[in-house]
Amino acid sequence: MGKGSRVQGSRVQGPKHLSQSGALAHNTCQDAELSLGICINTTSSSIDSPERTQTTMDRILRLFTLLIAVIAPLAAALKFDLHPVSPHDAAKYERCIRNFVAKDQLVVVTAILDGYRGDGQKVDMHIRDSMGNDYHKPKDVVGENRYAFTSHADSAFDVCFENVYSGSQQGTGPRHVELDIDIGADAKDWNAIQAGEKLKPVEAELRRIEEVVAEVVTEMDYLRGREQKLRDTNESTNERVKWFAFGTMGMLVGLGAWQVVYLRAYFRSKHLI
Image 1 (cartoon, rainbow, N blue to C red):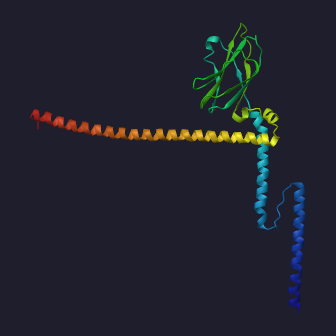
Image 2 (cartoon, helix red, strand yellow):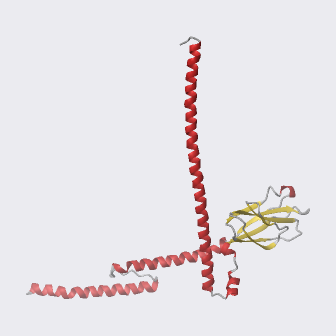
Image 3 (tube, rainbow, N blue to C red):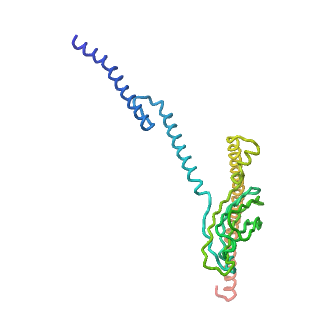
């Protein structure tokens, strides 16, 4: 009987001990949630693990999105100094910024230059593409300037600056330039579109995202077409090189055979063989 009572006692105390451990783990989990917002309960089943992983991934994604939103405005514009040169060296020291644009895309170039007219320097701009199209060519640029154009072809375009001396004052410092180039959906004034079409902020954002996605699809189609052209060129070049190699080998074999025949005929005529 004594042995049986001990077994019965152990059976009664087991669930009680587990319930106390579960309560302790639950209290620890609540304290962790209040302090860190994260709780890992070792007594829970492994079925909730994917949900916790998804929650952690959502938090990381929000943090990454916030980081991008903070960094993006800092890298929105290109800043550089433009030193003045003599007029006959202007073409040599011309500074250009190149970007690629697809056909029929809106491009807005915003250039902010310090200084003022009559300070002994004159900054000229020239916006052109690699196909020979001139879009804008302003002279003596100061302050904030915006130039918009629609591209005529799938090509790269250049925004060039020239800073030349315009007077006897040649001891002045360089002009500081801040350049911002917006292409496609980023070049549109979405606040004006939202006000003009009476769109909600979410609708305007969806419109912008839709146009961005359409631009990505168009660019992918263009890259696919270029890849196909390059592949055809590669295959054609490979075929030409192959036949050129065969032709070269045939010419060498024919030349060697001709030399053998000629030398045998020559030696026979001289009675050497």
